[in-house]
Image 1 (cartoon, rainbow, N blue to C red):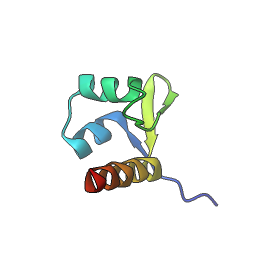
Image 2: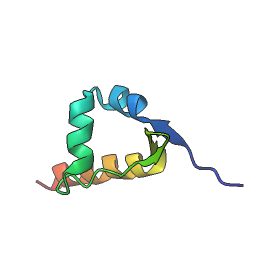
Image 3: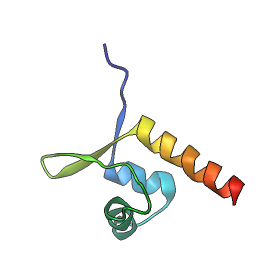
Image 4: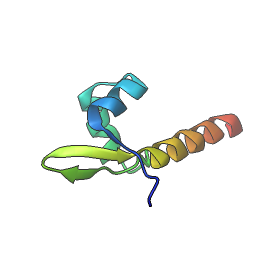
Length: 65
């Protein structure tokens, strides 16, 4: 049994305290390396493990800089 957790676009916006436009920009900006969502019936779902990995990579990048 898979232990994957998906969260919705609005949950991602709440998690990072960002607007829908900012989320759109992050998803479409290759420099951000933001995890890509899967789309089901025009709704976006993000894999929580990928978001956590992205957070860690951003934190590691800031620690080095």
